[in-house]
Length: 470
Image 1 (tube, rainbow, N blue to C red):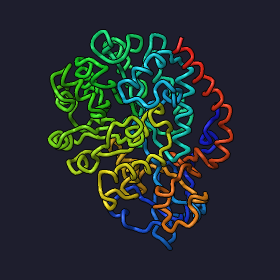
Image 2: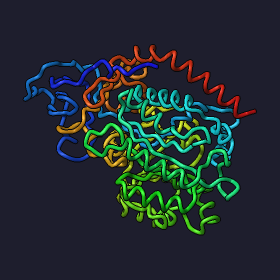
Image 3: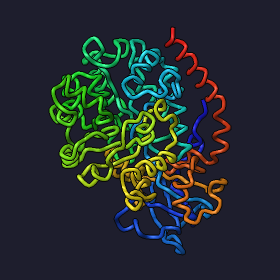
């Protein structure tokens, strides 16, 4: 497997000045640095930013190294808040194309039931590289498919993200309500509640770090109201509170989900969330589309986070997330690519463009700007994941950054470099740093080195689908 370049780039006490970028987005829409022109760049020491420099100014700190960024746009590393890495193996599966959520899931569950440890390892690596090459420095995954032969999927993911040097939030997903008990998934991909709770505690104890600058956080993530039992939802909330970890689930994605909750549970999804002890700032929800105004106010008052997944919502025709109403009510809004079987890619910078276009179908153009979607993907996503040490360019924050060149044909003639990044359709980062270490120093070279991994991944994808059709 390809090793990240961070393996050979040692973090030192030397200072690095990323000098005179073409344009800068600080990550924040408010605060002291939001309106400052930071085209003087930033200074990094160890894993942190120690200085932000106004245009035309010099660093106060003594500088050991300089990087001329005059042909690049500087951003905080993008932060993905929801994904299903294993789904990179089932992109554009013919039987699932052009299906709404419930039939789409029912088509894919039998295929996913055949996942092995090797599938998880390679799919995780592919998904992480795809995210990193598109500018993401923090990845989040929601893995909830555990067959009888696959009990250590999260351990495998933890090993991969640690090896690559990318920051991660891994969520221990789960399904406990099978078709025979009134749920959507088949028996082959559900576990008992005790299995789930025992493994959740084991994983938290082994991997979760709540420290500033943490490279790996764990969260607990029963999949959805139509795939887990009420008791598991309640017990998971209790365990998360005891262990000080966050909660994550799908909610409000489709009208079918609302109908399921009313029919099977006798209440709407937000009522169910509150009933199970989930309605609070420790929780973030994937999608968050189909809420009424009263529910939006309740979610906002509880400071619930929302992982906004515009591409997936368009592919599955699920609807448009009411981002501005949710934010005004008090919700935290972050950006997410969702799984690669409903996107069907993991390109974080492209997700911002899709969000801008999709959200302008609901809101005015002056309400959904390139600054707004960049904020959702940086500071907003950090807040969704419960972090205040990433997502912005400011002294004391982690040195997680992306540098983007605007040298493609699609950027020729662009007058505002920062707007061009989104509106003209950037797709690849040029350089990527996590915690003060370069993990991508030359994106083209990195892509070339991934050919063997890509070939292995594709063969595993063919094998998985063939096996699932037998």
